[in-house]
Length: 63
Image (tube, helix red, strand yellow):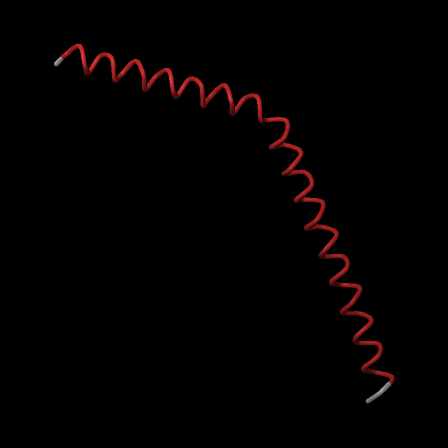
């Protein structure tokens, strides 16, 4: 019983090690994705503000 537990434990640690290695290898991609997401959020806020201003100007001209 102890041997099975030990074997299962070592397999689990090996699998976790592989997951960690994969995560480390993907860090540059994750960072790029976060940066692109942040830029998109900021751009969408500015576009939203611009559209709101245009709509307010048009509402003032045509009551």
